[in-house]
Image (cartoon, rainbow, N blue to C red; front, top):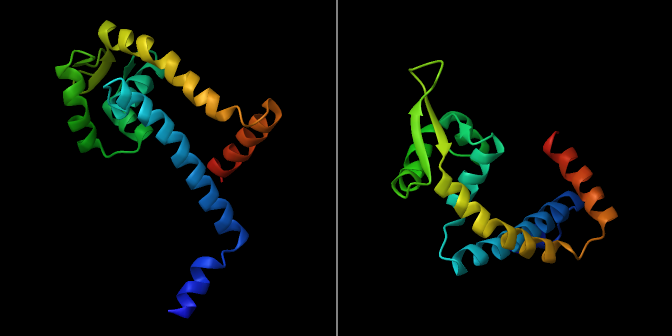
Length: 148
């Protein structure tokens, strides 16, 4: 038990940095999630709509699955409620009829326009603890970790 206590309390610098990053991320995600909950909106569904918009409004399900970090079979399950709510539509790929594409509808775009600005403001308020220089430095460091 003593060995384990030492192991979990005496963290090397890499572990300290990792857990600080995880905790900071969790706190920021919590700000965003609380915002979505207060609006009666599912934050995970918003994330899907945002990713579709990042691709110009249409995306392959496999690419969407990769972007949000889920398996291909799971993406289909995640898309069902969005489709039922009229926020997305599925259609045959224009060049390869064997494939399906997902497109955001005008209703989906309206939902994003209604709520994203205030959500981004809440995140901005939290991130204002850092100066612009610190934010740029953070981006450089995070990209360095992402690309390793």
